[in-house]
Image: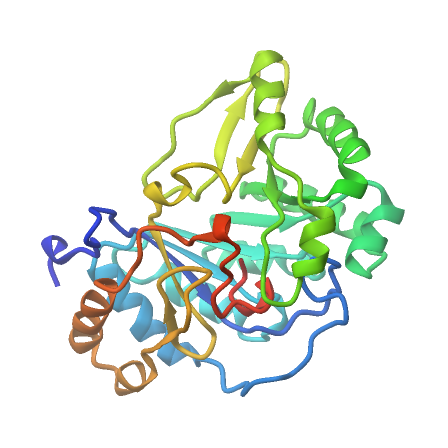
Length: 327
């Protein structure tokens, strides 16, 4: 299918970026996402590699250039290298990224890179081992940091995600800023988002990124232009730092105006927004292997995408927790 049949919604937003969840299972117990650990409360008949090949081909034919593999925790799938490879070998796909908690990073990153992975987002909410353990339920920070070094040595572009949380914010900022002096990664501070399961936690722990942005600008950091396949972060650089800083502020004005990504769940449902009321089932056409019919369905369904996620009005849609779609 030709480029002029690209995925463009009624607000003129063009979608070149697919976030593909391959499992909703996660082995961490992050306080802001799965404080009680993973609960199997739905079917686990996840998309198979053949299904994923059909889906990614359909998106690529509609102008998608970047695929991000997410979970839950994607490394819990034994066929992850195969999935990375089939995404990387799909004509039209230029970037294959993945978001991970890093639990298997040191053991597996070389395999992922050989399979075609080009970008890695790594969740590290604190550089203090005790705080990291308190937030995630895992005492694995040092192994994850060692895996990060291996990823950089392999030439992967690495971004580190840290959720802004009130109890840890002051120490979190100080240690991360010192770390970025010599660490060539982009550190992205992400505002805590309200979901169906964390409303009381959100009330007590949400922290706006706007004061951090103001502080960065006052300290000589310069905001960078976004690439058309980039995520929603506002990114900043400083000549005295090897690393960069990104801010993801979903409660900021006009956050949704630059939306360029669509999400598909591990069960084959299209989510027009992380906080959509429901997923739209693509599985029948995916399993038929009918790429052209699937492309037509995607273009038809895109007509239902809203202008905003309405998070600022307390709306969370069907998103009970972020592990459902990998954020």
